[in-house]
Image (cartoon, one colour):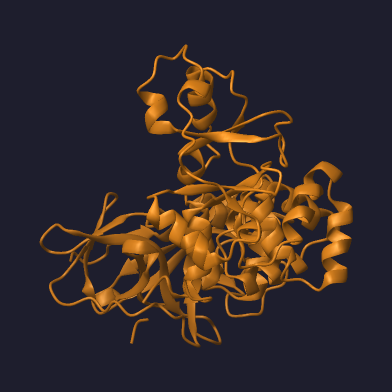
Length: 418
């Protein structure tokens, strides 16, 4: 590795990591450093947090890195430990914990916000050596407020001090393209305070998507840190079944207060789902599958299942019913599978391709029976009806997996450095 390599850490985020055989190991998610106390000499870089298959996050020691370029990070020969990354006392994540931090210019005392930090290779180590900041109060004479400065590490103070009110705009800009599940994984390794700051910076839709991917205890913690009005808005942006699951973890009085703050038409399907026991089809189902009348054309049905917000399991089939078309609907008539729709002329009616051979299940059907039903008929979703054969919703295979996996499965995505 050539001496003097310098790279800004935000540019590392998402870069592929390759072993010496040019096989991709994963992608960079953060840089781990050891901050030093006192006059804050440049911190030593300990290694990289790398996300590998199945969103597992591992630690790669910086000594294993042979080169860093704008396109990739290359590793030396040797074995990479696949134990889950677990941040230790004294360790700091550069992207997750230092971006957006408020520090001061040592010479003038001006307050600035951290935009990015550069790490640089020396003869013996990698160190954090430069800081890109934005001035947000005061300013040097003749320079406009809000200017961006690039400074040596020892020109700023405050990195090792407790931080109040740290924002998250620059962190979120770095991770803008992460899928909700991946951003939830990033947040999992942070303190409750930092998670709350990130939640405050996310818009309602994005926060709702991220909450749906978090462990229940973190969901409750984040929702509890929001103002009641915003908490209700975020619940409205969640899928009704996920909102019901989250509210079911709250004390009944708190859940009812939030339901009352939600728009009535958004709260009603959530209330209906809360009436069912957790490990039944009613407690597992979503009340918003794709529902269409029998006189819908194949072209119209295909247009509906192309909607980007639909999960693959919900987009796999359309439920055909009599009016009304909101759950609980009129009489359930059958299911139109998307593969069959693809084989039919666009002008055909879906009533001609409805599968009536797959029986729906009742809302009180227990989880074990739901699982057997999906496995027996090789389904990715199954309709749920009431005693009058009105469609109430659908249970998808991912709903079932969420309940079959261990309670802490979201927390064991990755594997710990030693």
